[in-house]
Image (cartoon, rainbow, N blue to C red; front, side, top):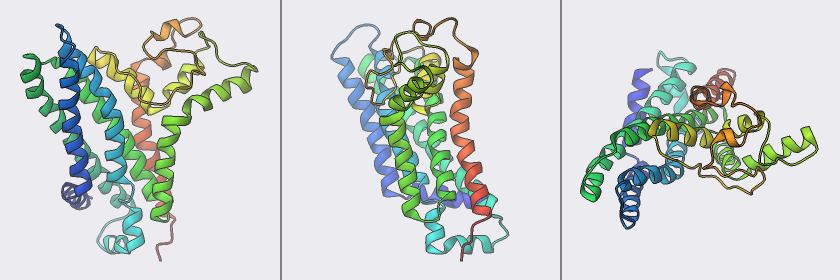
Length: 287
């Protein structure tokens, strides 16, 4: 399994697409800090870290999709997966090796980006908001793992490269563009009305099953800043993402809406698709 992980990590490190996304992440750090610096103020360094959550939500899922979408389905289509299985490796070990290699590459890229942010912050503002930056970095690694697990799991389950990329991109588009209409539709079916400014706790629960929403909430808590979810909103849920959750929920905020549960949501997006992919690949005919 470790042999597969090392091979996958080397392959990703040599990928031009992966390097391009890393450069885009580094450039986004410079751009965000320069834009925020124009406003000035004693809290500008923290505000800049706050705003890094937006490009991270765009580029990190892209990196995870590039890393994972063809990691198993591509080798399956080319026939090289049968070569790997000719080694003393099971199908489960191949998938887990691909997972460890891919997630390691994503983690390294984020650590490099966070490390690059330190001198940029020092040069731009003369200070580094260590707590905010560390919280954002840790949450972003977990966010990358969620999308990495999703991509690699779907790749393991898919019979062809086309099915793999279609399912992964379709899932991401659903999270970004369709999640709010789906939640509002479920609420309408259950209550025969559209959500108001104050709703029952299960509506915020459905919202936060979206890893983008979960990431924004956890990053806001760990970093002590306000990270907004980067998804399309149509105003159907009548809530400003910047308002406290307690102002939107009818009654007390349930335990399943606080940060430990949201961390579990991100972990589930990493683990459940991989488990599904492993089970599908075990029964697949590779001939």
